[in-house]
Image 1 (cartoon, rainbow, N blue to C red):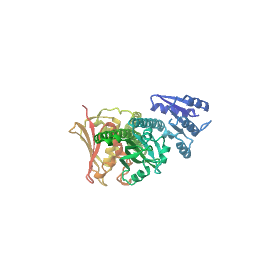
Image 2 (image 1 turned 90 degrees about the vertical axis):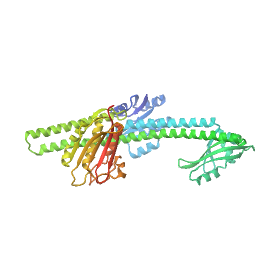
Image 3 (image 1 turned 45 degrees about the horizontal axis):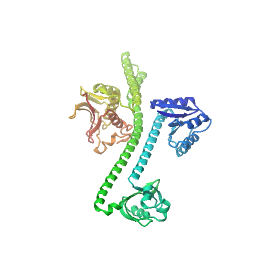
Image 4 (image 1 turned 45 degrees about the vertical axis):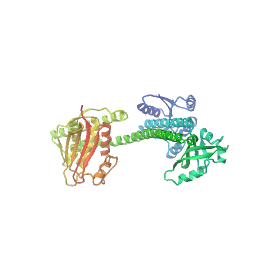
Length: 505
């Protein structure tokens, strides 16, 4: 259960925050804070996981609340949701540990729960990393491996107890006066290497005069802009005394290094995957916003066109009725698209509902939406019926095919009438591949992958107007359906775009 403090003087704004958070989090408990007394009680009870606060409050401001919370609970996520702040306040808040700064505007409402989720996930990742570090230190101590860190001046910054015990000293201060390892020399050596890492076997003399052979592993790293030398050290005296034992122990050490490296790499991959998911979530939101405006244009263009004709021309009743029917159909398409996109928005973070879809009905609706564009460009669109059924989502399929057909009509040479061919075939692996073939200007091989990324344009807006997101929508839609998308093309010889779907079993 997620427990959140919502701090805001404005009742309506509090209601807005609560509404948006409950939409995002199924398990959430919200405590509303109205004054300093209630805040003090909540901070004492410590029954919350995160804080959402306004900046301008009657009894204090968001910066004071942020600093108070972070002083008591440094890792607690705090998000400022305000309409009265400024860039300077935002910068100061971020310096004080604010997790995110969200403006109170209609276009930013959806960002509030997303920001809270990101902050919570970031906290969980941090806790996991700290727990991993603790476990790693315990493991190294159990393995009797000393660890240390030193700077370029040869001063030791930190170490574990195993390191001190192995060198026969009581504390780091004692080691500063007599550097048994000669850290400055190793530091200079690593700076000259292309790969600043070295593993050595050396013999050391302890302060009491005894000798010990150690395996020393050192690496030059950068922490907060300062280069430091990190090292591992292990007693290998027994291994040096008997050659066979030395070989066996070398094998064990090598395996341990491999296992430790694999553990760290697995942890890093998990963190990278988590960060990538957060980035993709933001990219999905951006693509969704553009797709709404992109796909509403066709039905609205039809409504505007037929409405203008009815307004400016005197037509016979039968023709007026026909145009009005077209307006109604286009309006219904627009409303249906809006409803479907709103539903898509609500389920964007869960599994997309897929079902058996008739491609013929999808293509027919796309052509109806693009009817005015087809007539204006004097285009010919050939559909080779019957088209099969595929596993997909009706709204997403409309977006994909509409973008591909619209591009096929648009990207042709001047004075050339577009000819588009739509057909389907079954592949060798029992998939359905829908082809959209055109007689356009074609695409060079080195651009055929780039065109599916957001805002990629190969021509100026004067030559071929557009936003550069159509094919990005196509690829994202295909990914949501578990489908594949690609193109076969040569400059001046047209293009063949394809989408490969799963068919009915």
